[in-house]
Image (cartoon, rainbow, N blue to C red; front, side):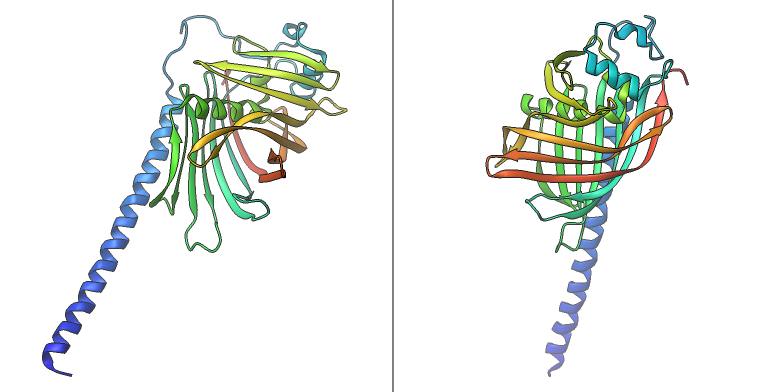
Length: 295
């Protein structure tokens, strides 16, 4: 080996190390940017634009007497889920663990943190999915902020994998998710200015939630004790860069009393496709934190 060859080999090795270091540094910067965007979304959620008269009196506790006009199955559910004088949830933070299947039957473990506000409706969901055989997690952020829905994903928080934001379909889909998941913050399921209930039968009621031009409709199916056991409806699903209205179903189990409210601690979500159900999320609630109106 000549000295010139040795010199070029040394230079190439040095360049490879430098390139690797530069790539690692760029990955760190990109990951920090992802975390910063998550943090901005949560701050935006918790600092909403003012709505209505800020000086108007606001109810702070659940009053069962105000539910006389609600459908009977909704009255039974709220009697099951809420005690009289239950403080109303203003904000909440949830942590889940479970499995996610982007394709039917191909389950991958995930962890997630979700922040929610109820007035006005909004959420930010941040998840890390261990998508085999990739060496890094797929990081996902879904949100509904001030009437705008969005979903974004990135490998390791570094390599963008696409997303959708700002269309009426994405907003409606995100609001539907908020409505279906309100079993975790059940004071938000009290009928009010935004939320209307209509009886379907003795064990089913239809909820219609409207916010800033978006409307979500879901059927809540109740068990023998009044608890919500299923939520069904039509929700937009991302397909080939677009949105397709698709039947969906959520199943909820293992209720527990947390901060005075009965909430499900396990659940499963599925798209109801012509070829059969595609279960895509199944999870367990591991940690909650509520902020109430009177605290």
